Length: 318
Image (cartoon, rainbow, N blue to C red):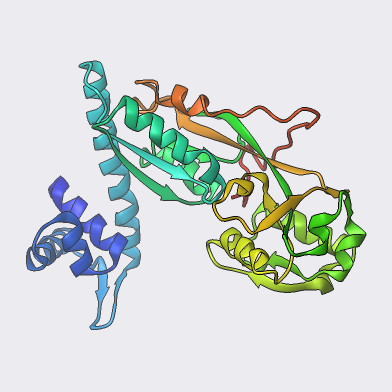
């Protein structure tokens, strides 16, 4: 059993398509199939269920995939530790983000990294805070932009921003002209909300507020795709309703809406950078310091709020 065979298997397990996996690892598809079949013969069991329409992992394949990811991550980590001891510069950094919350900070971070380390390769993936923490712990991710968590074990977290949520209204909406808005002012408006299966803490907060003030009946549009915030802003801009959005959306290009404070709604949620103190990539070459330099102080008179934690983790918070 060779490491390259494990990496080929992982590629197929992640793509669930031999053609795409072959392109990913840059070998011919027949050669890739031969390597996977050799693994199955050596293990004495099937790793995939193959049909003319799809490729699926068997239960044994799922367990083997999990183990292979850990083995390959450990090999990569060992290589980076060796390079660090030898004084070599890092070659790649893998970043996990809670998109779209990082829209306001990620471009600035990438620009600073590119200026200081022009030859570094950067891979960015999106997920929720829990997924990214697991990636940090198993070495698949070097740096994570996530919601607040506690320092547990090797996990380290540093706060860099607090997002304040305000009411987004189209410029043509009557509320855009009001100096002060109350929750009662929303009763004559159509509301854009979220209806995803696994709501984030932010989304649950506003849904509970709508119920508390008997505004649920005003919800005319709901978004359930991965880019719910983008959908919300687009619908608001088109004048189809109102909704709550983070303050950084004020900087979006060609913005056709205004952000207004609502009396009785004072919601903020934290964002920060996390890393493993055992990861030589994140712990050297000023990577974490560059991320920390993005910290934005809370505005005067604003007390930062963060999401509640469950057993040290933020649960479903995105």
